[in-house]
Image 1 (cartoon, rainbow, N blue to C red):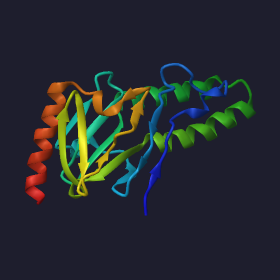
Image 2 (cartoon, one colour):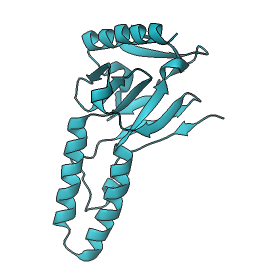
Image 3 (cartoon, rainbow, N blue to C red):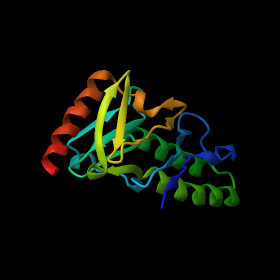
Image 4 (cartoon, rainbow, N blue to C red):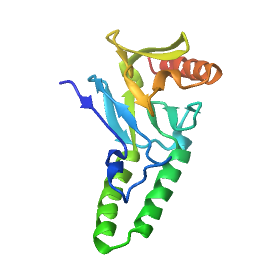
Length: 176
């Protein structure tokens, strides 16, 4: 069965009580792939390597068992702070209730990562300025991932991306 994941963080920003500035990050993922799953935010202490996008909004994580991407810790902190500020600024009980309810949902979403098990990946490479993730059946995954209208796979420096590829190959060899 194919999994379809579509996430828009803080899409309810149209409500006046919610962030509409820097905290209104948008991560849109449209993956129809049996290998991709939404899971808990990865603890960077468990990472073999973790690289941040050039703009610092997303972190790509490699552990001994998964490749995951998620909002960076810096972005998470900023969004949480701005949500708290909006909740504190609510001018009546109804607005506060809405902000609290939406904040809880948003916090659950932003505490997630999109993951693929290493055993489900054949390869990770860096070509033409983009990371390429190839599933074991030869299909590319994470191809249609945008963060703030920026192509996720092209959002890392060449140096960081190549380091990630080297570490992936090392981990992959150890589990194959």
